[in-house]
Amino acid sequence: MREVGHGAMGVVYEALDPTIGRKIALKTIRFDGIGTTADEAARRFKNEARAAGGLNHPNIVTVYDAGEDNGILYLAMEFIEGSTLEALIRQQRTIATQQTIDIIRQVCAGLDFAHARGIIHRDVKPGNIMLAGNGLAKITDFGIARAGEAMTITGQVVGTPNYMSPEQVLGKQLDGRSDLFSVGVILYEMVTGERPFEGQSITTIMYKIVHETPIPPRKLDATIHPGLSAVIEKTLSKAADERFPNGEALVRALQDYKTASLSNVSTLGQPTGDFPGLVDANATYDARPQPDQSAAYPPVPIGQDARLVLVQSW
Image 1 (cartoon, rainbow, N blue to C red):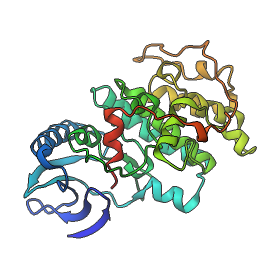
Image 2: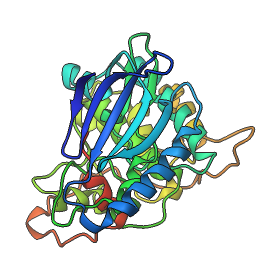
Image 3: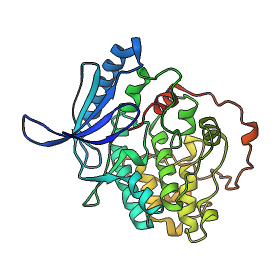
């Protein structure tokens, strides 16, 4: 068994399943500092992991087993020969448009599959997207963010909220469109090389997520197609009702980005077939960069889902 990654809450190992001899990824989570919530954390973790284990899809990392041993939670899952999208972005800064669309297409397929079964990821970010050597993209850590709400460590903030949706920051009820907002943040970063919501403190970042419209990608880089910029802007709409209703609609819009604009991007993503028409074709978008108000940022109410994401770092 060898370590292949670690963070504030635990370690990931490459291991071998002794029963059938397959290679697995073994993710561990320490109970250190959790105190009296350990039993509840273990129960919730196992329940959520079992739900995630039922997601059998080519773009979702398969969960084989979950449990607890001597105060350490563990998750046994499919081992992916490759690296994370986070590593690719760090190496290349920006990703070619066609490769970006292909990766996002696969991520959206996995998310739509999970959302149709009532499972929201809650922590979609480049570090949770695995890229295999054959170009296959797989989402990992389904259910772990939800399980973590019983594992929040008082007074300790770890990780980053950069990919959270406004409703997640505010602790509101979530649906699949929250995950798709996170996909929009990833899209923005892959295309521009910059995160849309940055700041010197977590409070600043959260304020921007809730209140500020990011600079349109095309204003950061004039070579970005205006249609692609428009699709990304819609994906990052503050109101969930103004975003694409599902991953399929987002992918359709991305594939047709060359004919998109802020005035018609809604119709590009119109669902067909099994998906109802939920997109508001009359939605308007404010593409103007907002003034810097960092000196006067009031505290942003942090919801339960926000807190649990902040304590996770793999």
